[in-house]
Image 1 (tube, helix red, strand yellow):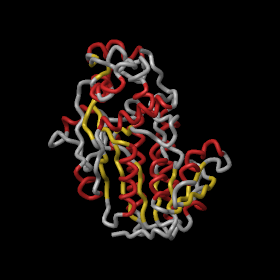
Image 2: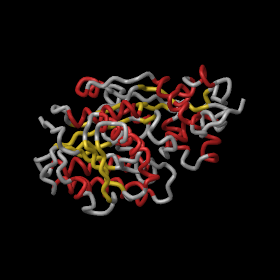
Image 3: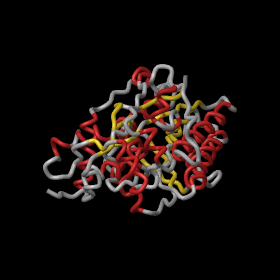
Image 4: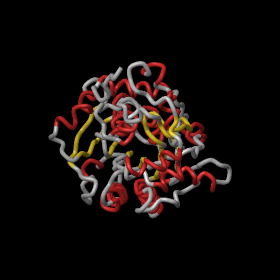
Length: 355
């Protein structure tokens, strides 16, 4: 059991990112002091969304210069912190060199942060943002599970540098974290494994892959239809709550699948029809798998036939009961997350009316 003092500062890596932004907002609302290591503390444009939140919340934010791949650069930001949230990791699918762009930053960044925790006597707990991608590689992996459901006991064994490099990077990074944690006994490690994250972020112009995925439902890209590609989905606001609870509930331990809904891309798009169907080209039918198999690799080189075979028309099912039971998680409806996210894109000119 680990009790974190609320008077001590809390460090959040990747504070300007999609997931971390909402977490920082929650911490500031709770009146905590947040240490935010960033590449350039003197870039007001990059920090404006965090500064806006800090100006209207009881907490305080302090910036420190640090780089994920620069050994020891987190030492100053971590000094005096009992709780560290490590959320910084690239989420990119279309990469030229997966080792250099995904695996190295994920693993070496994790090692850098956790080795600094080893050298910082105040640290009692690290909360790591991993992913359900460290639990499974493709939806078809579900068939290998004992009860046809993904659980925290499972590890991704089907991804590699050649196939599912992003998922492979998350697996490698989380395994690195557990190895470093098990080699010492002062701080404990609590891991959050979110499914696909959607919902309005603090930065309406975010660059997460999910922004483009949802935007395509309204910009005409998916006018002909959306595939039934199964996903778990979690709202970024619920995910921030999960991180917060993982940090401050003394009994929290181990991995946690944080996912509100077992769904698919086509079903997600249908939640937008009622409100936006008249003015935007929301998909109205599911694309058949054979058509995806034919045109997918031509339209998008990351959409290989292996990816299509192993994921399209294959359901995704995750067991979220541990997070509900041990972190007290409650999840907002899928339609609420989708509509709020889409509306944010409209408000910021990312999706325009075509009707």
